[in-house]
Image (tube, rainbow, N blue to C red; front, side, top):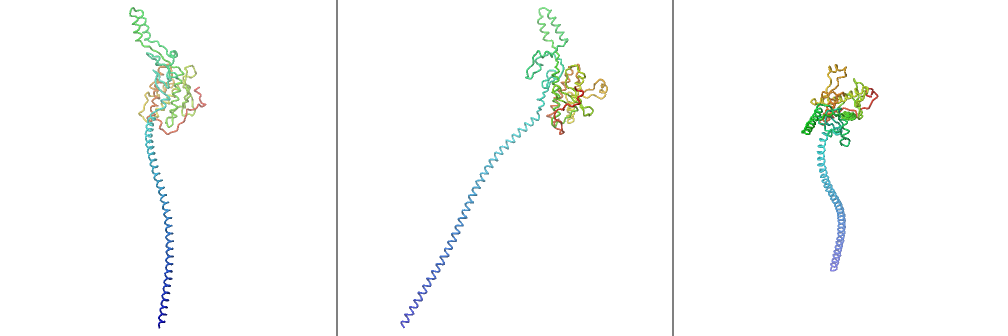
Length: 393
């Protein structure tokens, strides 16, 4: 019986050892499972950490790129502000320049270059254009030779000897009175010297001034060129009935009669020498020149009926023209004077003075907008000489 107990104890111990061994084996299996799980978790966390680092690196790159973009945007904003300041300064400068140019334009619109290129003035009893006297003869009292000397190209007065050739003394009662006064004073005693000085100081000197034909022809050439430039000015609105052929001091006037296409040219110059129909052709050319001025004034009057010339250019009445047709009359007059050159040089000088005064007023109408605003086409340049110049040569 005791051996049985011993055997049972041994079996129990053996059984317990087997249980312990199974427990140890189970614990080892559990440890292996836990280690595998930990390793997998560790690997997963490492992979997650690597992904996080990669994402963080990308975020840092994105942040750096965003910082660079922000700096670029700020720099561009500064540049735009600088450009805005410069543009605003340029705008202010442009507006100031525009205001200045506008004032200059207003002033320049009031200028008239033709007034400077063709200066019309007076020299004693004569009207002048660019310093050239347009007139034949004038009678002057208390003549001052230095005041009426013609100017040379350099602006200096010509010599007295050259000018005396154009001044001729006229017999008058004042000269006879002066001679009689001198005779009486010479015969008187004691106070003869005083009497001579009183008479010579009180009696005026009457002198007749004559203009050479070379100067007259040059002045007419300047006047013809001025009228031709006025007609050919762009958007002028003027159209003359006759043509002007500018050739300096040998200019010509072309006449179209009754709407004919052929043009007859007449000389706008003369030397008062004997020529067949020379003076008639010259007077016809003067009438054509006056007709051009009348055409311009009428076209201005169409825009403003209140405009009048200081010396009206009048057409001959039908009855008067019919009565004077046989004698060659019926010509245009300026200020009541005929521009036809005849024996009375003083009256012709006055007529030429009236003519130049009217032309100067035509120039003054330009800044008022009375001409130069039309839109019709015009020919450019003076007309050329055609083969039909039968009456002008």
